[in-house]
Length: 114
Image 1: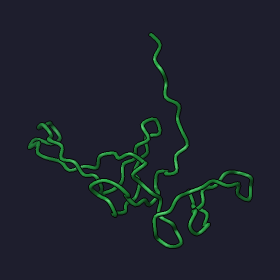
Image 2: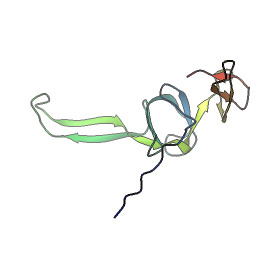
Image 3: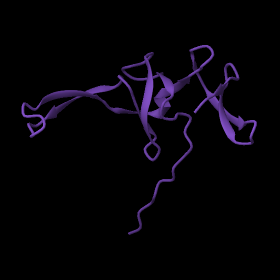
Image 4: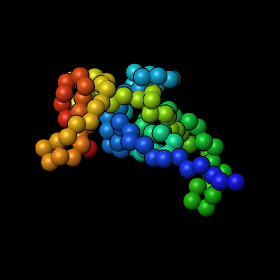
């Protein structure tokens, strides 16, 4: 049996971007992207989509306990925040000064660094 390998796709969100959640429990909140999983099209956003994890006692944590941490969310539920206006915006790609593709805000036309 041959396994199908999912191809990595270009995403509109990168690590370090400020994003706004447009769907789900945290709708309307903004945060910074900590990591992006290109194969699963999911991102972890700082302080959003928090889950409780029960931790067994270990040598480093002898008490064990309950930890709160961020869970990943699908990138279709996230929109990039426009650097000029601070609102959620769609993104596009266009050739920059040196010929490389750069992301830009569809609302303001501002180039997004990153």
